[in-house]
Length: 155
Image 1 (spheres, helix red, strand yellow):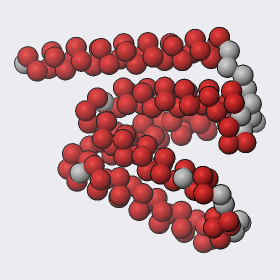
Image 2 (image 1 turned 180 degrees about the horizontal axis):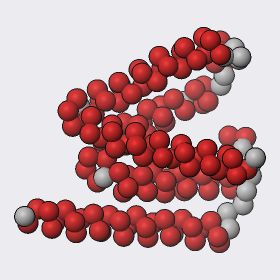
Image 3 (image 1 turned 90 degrees about the horizontal axis):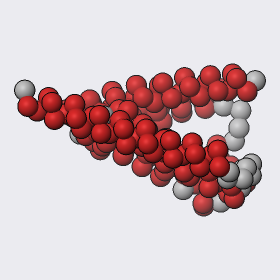
Image 4 (image 1 turned 120 degrees about the horizontal axis):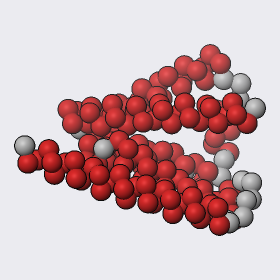
């Protein structure tokens, strides 16, 4: 089961990279806010149909949730908006690695302290090393991208 979840996560990451690239291209034509809006409104309509025909929960329970849990919607909007903004400027891979670094850093803190009722996993040397290696990967990719842009500008 664990390998299936990992494979599904890899597939999700593939979809996110594709979405980032396509949304970045669309934002050049339609605008950043407009592209973000289009993505969310389309997703909302699709999910409304799924909830209507296949939902098994009670959507009204959202009204009973603590306010801090409802704040997560702003994080999703912020993530998508910032991705649409960043991709045309720094590229898909630099944007995605920067996003992953943010996820890793926040995830390590959330795991370490068990915030939001999650599983508590202590911060250790292996996790810190992974984080440092991701920072190095971002630096190398950003540096290579800048070098490539400079070559392109000279022609």
